[in-house]
Image (cartoon, rainbow, N blue to C red; front, side, top):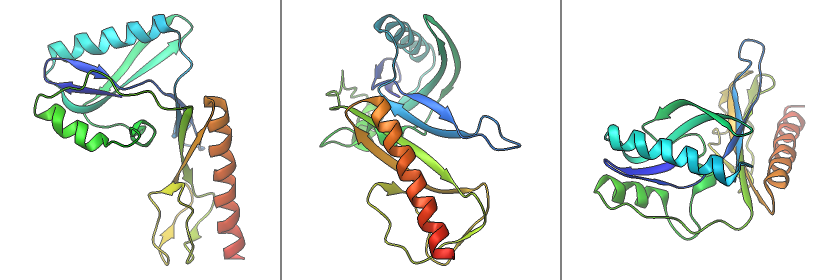
Length: 191
């Protein structure tokens, strides 16, 4: 995730993504965790690539770049001239990514954000069957929640689950447990 002012870029951080495969969609987005477990050397290379692209293409505001990283090798897959799916895990403590986006669009680029304590993860829960959404007191660690009475068909996104923990591995485990909790609650209310 990075900010750009049309000439320069400020990298906000790196995340690692995982897939949530479905029969016809083996690479369907599952979630992401930050910080990514990459070396400082790779982080510098990725930051340099983002900087060079931003100098050549007038990107502004929040943007994301997807790379495939394997060891000390990296390949740029795409630049998204918009916030990416990892938006939730980069929200600054006591600040606002939207505010930073607006400032960057006006040419006011922050040089860096304060590092988060620990790690953050987010995951998309896909309905494992057709779900008639019950009246439900959604936990505060969920987002993008459907309205009671609506139907979410099998394979469609049900909601987003968020987690924060001491390490990236712990945050990913917590988001996985929370995913199972929500799906279990939906099954229990449908029974």
